[in-house]
Length: 176
Image (cartoon, helix red, strand yellow):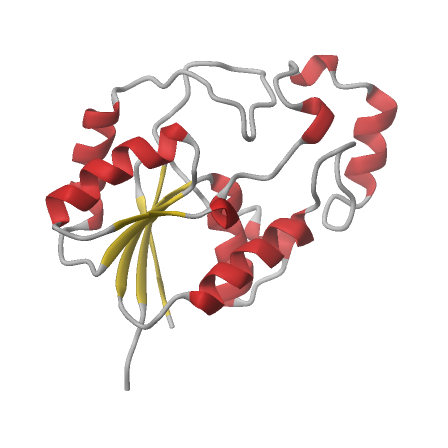
């Protein structure tokens, strides 16, 4: 029986705090080379391909990881972090309270203004997983994508997925 394994590593820690940065480009606490070194150490080199979000914080170290593994690097828009729409780049304290409260009442199904819901992110992740051929892969991604994978691959509910750790530059493995 063929098995697919996916070693997912969240991007390096960002050098900002209190900011809604979902898809925004933000500085990191380490270089792409240092992040890639940790991805290689934790994700290995025996891979059929390395995938990543288009965000430079994911794609730049993933390209280095893929080259070290002598595997192709694929960038896929379905692997972006949750889109926060009008809130992108705002300090969380500057997000209008009424808007935040409305979203928080049903964040699984509701989206921030101009953004997407957790179910939307789940749909993107599901589409990507379903298109993935059997194999052994690395993925440089975001916390939202990791939690979406918990929902899609492991079949857990979103509130439980949000309790799953997604530490920076640590590997989470999925098998199916």
